[in-house]
Length: 458
Image 1 (cartoon, helix red, strand yellow):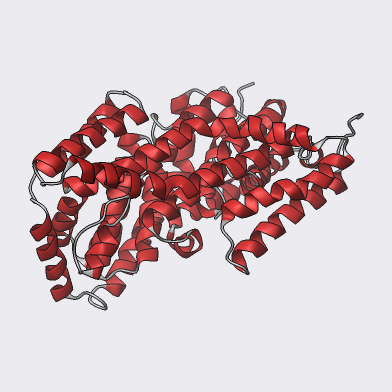
Image 2 (image 1 turned 30 degrees about the horizontal axis):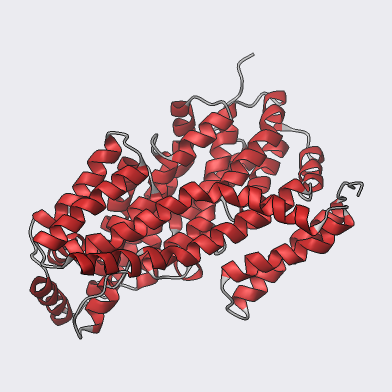
């Protein structure tokens, strides 16, 4: 059949239906996001058919885009195995005991934010930070009686700080490359919005910590957790070796998968030869997740995590979300909206505003923020040059909105990963992930008032 081009009205209707369907499915009926994303393929069917596409073609578009999830899927499965092995080796329990000994509720949230910031900058990955320090600090927070949603917000803020600012982060490299921006210029531009937001976030976390200290802190509960952990594991420096190996490997630029799996192998050896688990136990843990033999419900909630199967629902989100993105992209359903956006305003401020909202639209509609990076950079790159704007203005918008904002959208893969690993829903931690929503707002303020905008020299 002859293919038609989508109109603005048709594109807008399709996007509105998709967003409404997902919002109602999650908010009203509490349906799993993966199911909703797959059902959205069927929502797109009549629209694509109206444009002249057969269902087999729609399937092909979805499969073509979904193939891009193979690399992150491997990372997700590696993280699941790493978490389980770190539990069995006593790595996370050792950090829990140290944290409960040294950290007070007053400074816990601020220290959690700082530690996750440092770890994510060093590792260059938010996911790796969530699976190591993030999980440990969630356990410490539970022991100190801190609300898990607040702790998760501090962890997510810190983890995404490095995902945005580290020169080793894939999003930092991608945004600087695709906008043809020197990476250090890109990072310097991002510092202007991210550092103030991080400073404000740190003050807020410190204020919350001071206000809640003593309200729910129960020393007997903390002592019980530490006693239980010491009874189950050998707590000393040896179990910390796997996390050191991961950090060193990443600093040596050995790659995320290799680094994580190296730490996993070391953790397996420590779990078998030092903590006393059998090889069969480790096989079960790596696949199904670590389980501890205790009647202490607090320890069960802290330690029973990880495994490849715990990540399968996230893989379903990847396939469903990227497949939907492929259908929207290949049928040209998004083109009229972007054309309208780019032609609506013709000024430096206007074009930057449109790039900001276009990035937000992309991460709302497509579950992977890499799509936003490619689409917005392609559409707006020449427009920024036309209006005498340096490329780091565009690359900063992509990261301010796309990287940080993606952790706040329940159906985005980053947010799904955080919720899965930390055990707290995206909607629950979002109000406390201060860095993630303050940075896009600050970016918007800079655009509106034309502050810190780099112009091309005459």
